[in-house]
Image (cartoon, rainbow, N blue to C red; front, side, top):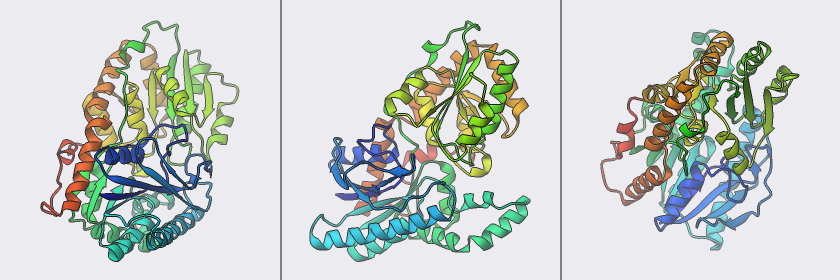
Length: 427
């Protein structure tokens, strides 16, 4: 089977960073004997800089990467990013049509596009009409639903204005969900969203995958003279309540508590966070780290932070897989499916976004009850083992896609155990 995967956001082979969802999916497809092309962007979403990679190259894991020229953007939210996505989708479609017409590469049997961006799904449906292939959607985020959080005012007014201001994106989303030959997603929450938008095609749950794991419990010292090591890995944008975390750690450090807060990543709010942390040696910024350095920082930590605002509408973020792979207990203010997973396994604690005093109390509790870390580290590792191991979940994903292309089965039913496994996720 000739498979095209289109996602312009994930780390690419050769960049020295941790393999993410689409890298692992392409590996699994190639391992199953399929010919795989990953279409991506020549602009890095993570670093907001041009990529230093050839426009076409073969990954060591057995698939090909093709880069699409992409207009830069410097914030994850805004008109500049929206325009970049439109131009990216148009450039990809033009490159695909021209390349097949010239005989540079064969037409696909299956196209899988991530959501977001929204525009590539429509392009994939047009390519399906041209070539007769299957077009499937893999939902990574709740677009355009999460745009509502950018509108000021009470919830009822935001909802009303969102429906008016985002009428076009809402129509495109419904067309994408209803027009896909199959829909996969990183959370039960998003499968429910697809169904509410009219999806009746086969559906599949596949969480973010991890390559290896550490049970975490052997790292902890019960000696309170050692600092409690808190870590955050990821973007420093407006969806993340990092300001509360920086202020809480700073306040505890000023009171003489023995803790350290490492932040690995970058983003538009990094300068603000650095100003807030100025003069506090307990808070350290590391920038965007290569995979090996990031893994070492995770291994040297005790406790991880999931500081996403609930109105970000994120179901299960990448960082949950990263943290549990390292066997780290988690402090979380993201509600819904992520909160339910952490609570089900006893792998950490919940606090309310913006509640500095509540976060301080939680951190103080871990500072003076270190045995809790060992117990919750084992629970975090079990969460990873049962939900995120790539060798289990990605072959299931591949089988689902193969079944979609075989035209077998009832197109109105979820066709895998992953949906059943995640039904308690609290969408």
